Amino acid sequence: MLAAFYVTYFVFASFSFNVAQQQQQPLQYVDGYRSSCKFHQAGTFNLIISAPHGGSLMPTDVPDRTQGGCRRSGSYCTWRYDDKCFDGQRCTATTVQDYLSGEFAENVAEELNSKHGLKPFVVIGKWSRKKVDFNREINEATLNHPEAISAYQSYHTNLQYAIDQVKQQYGNGLLIDIHGQGVGNFTMVGYLLDSDLLNRDDLQSTLGTITSIEQICSLSNRTECIRGQTSFGTILETNELGIAYPSMAHPKPGNGTFFEGGYITRNYILKINAIQTELPYDIRAGPYKRVNAMKYARALIDYMTVNTILLKNSKSTM
Ligand SMILES: [Zn+2]
Image 1 (spheres, helix red, strand yellow):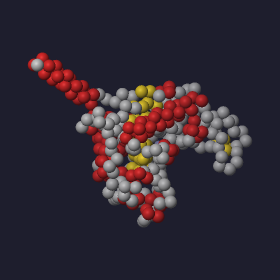
Image 2 (spheres, protein in one colour; image 1 turned 45 degrees about the horizontal axis):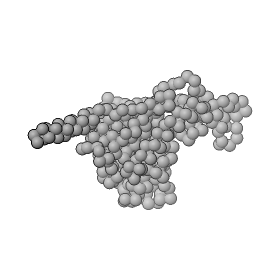
Image 3 (tube, rainbow, N blue to C red; image 1 turned 90 degrees about the vertical axis):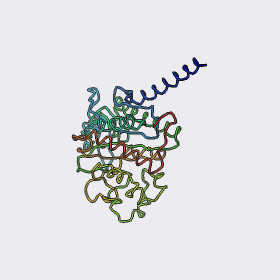
Image 4 (spheres, rainbow, N blue to C red; image 1 turned 180 degrees about the vertical axis):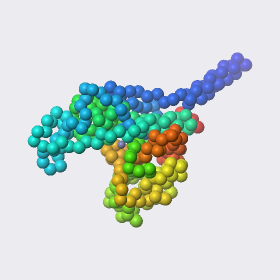
């Protein structure tokens, strides 16, 4: 009897120890096609973190995206790497890196894991945007180069897999796409509403445009979910992450450049809520970047909690 007790106790104790130990372990990443991206698919709650523009790897056999594509008439671009374009004009492809945005995303994921016992699904770009742009439609993204296409497919297949996992396990969730911008010292929160729409006094007049968080907005109303107390911008500000547009304190972005969300934010919203955040240099790369990642992780949990969309696997603890 006593032996049985000890065996039971030992099994229980070692199980508890294993759970505690598992929480301490950093997230394990798997490399995608030729290290074009890396991913973590063993998520334990319904959050997916994406960071497409932080990569710096420059595979030499893939041509730079600045060299290809041709516009011969109108607005149509061929987006072919092998188009010599003697009789047209080169198209402009954006190739600037969102410096340290991938590292910031990884730090946020690690904070969620180690401090909160919640493992997100994560996909992070490793190839430079000069070689592939994971946040554009496939032609502009890859210039139709076979290696760039494989890299692009690796990123999006993993994103799609993560979304399917979240749908299957939890029914719904949130995809957060992390970027960096050099426009100003504030964060732009993108829900697919451009600055003209956000600058309106009454957001009810924008209902003709679909947002990337329709499911969350259905819980309240458009003004509340975009710039109210429960909006992500307000919650970023509450967590001391500087100024965010749109938010309660800073509802309108004004006339400057505003990024309302790109291909990733737009492409998956029939399946999942999506938000793009464009973070300033100070937040993602300045001396307090680690503290900011901690605050950003907290903001994500606050946001999902207050909007009652946070769902976790029964196997995750805390
Ligand atoms: Zn970006």
